[in-house]
Image 1: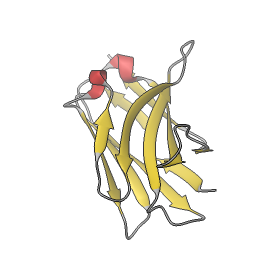
Image 2: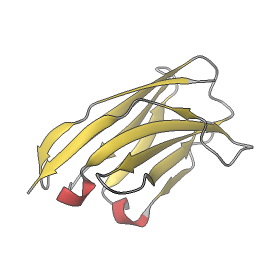
Image 3: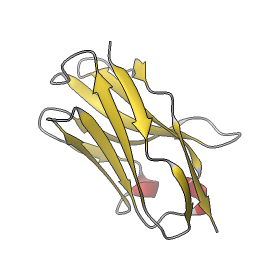
Length: 119
């Protein structure tokens, strides 16, 4: 099991940027896929982006393509979500999550960090 701790959320104006960080501990991540999810008030949690720890392959939901970038720092065991051109509809609690490559479900979750985008 991997322990995940997010940080970097906050209040930002529309058009602004934020970088979220997720520090992982507890096991090696070489066989993991790390993801970012978000949940807005009254809505279901949705996938935002993911990255293969080994190899760095990435995936994004359509609504954030070209605005968000997921990356990782192997030395720091940290996953980042660089968010730009933020919109009010990006307002949500953002969660970091991890899963083994061989599984489909994310089993390891952080506590979440609030991102609020004002218009």
